[in-house]
Length: 251
Image (cartoon, rainbow, N blue to C red; front, side, top):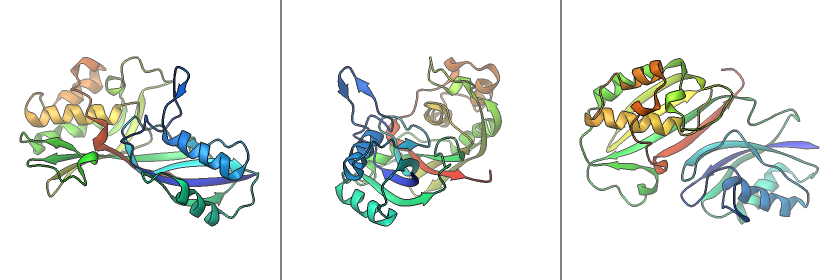
């Protein structure tokens, strides 16, 4: 039995997220489901594609990581070429390699990098419109940067999780949080050892309210301290969020 590691890019616009989901008797269109069905047909055996984590409906990825186990002896390079020929144009396997049998994409990940993109002013060009959130009102970026400092470090992010979410702990460590202006775009980059469901989009939406003057710069700090979800702004739209990469090995 071999273990194969896949690095996958996708435009999440038309998908219900990474993870296989059902709605009554119908299976929804997902990234995991699309890959799994294709690989089962190609390898002629049961295949389970396990991702490093979930991305929500409409969220994109430049470098999602997954693994699968197979008895097939097909060379990894040939399998990658064959899969990409048959995948829809909004999914691509960017790398496929054989790794030690013990590799596990989800549990061995040591950090993840997410990016949220806003397009400021004017009209967003059609070729980036599916990947940015348009903001026409001016944003006070200095206030947003000040607010963002509150999420760096080991924190309890209960206030940033989706209401009703169940998980063992809501404590996560954010190692880097930056806001960068690039032309008409404002980029929020967050790196950390893990993220709760909708956590990045909740941070982004609250930051946007801080930038618009609807919330004070100490809002994120108060959310961390009090764990009150009600202090958050609206959850930012999924289309602006991209999983940029997953790291393994040394933290």
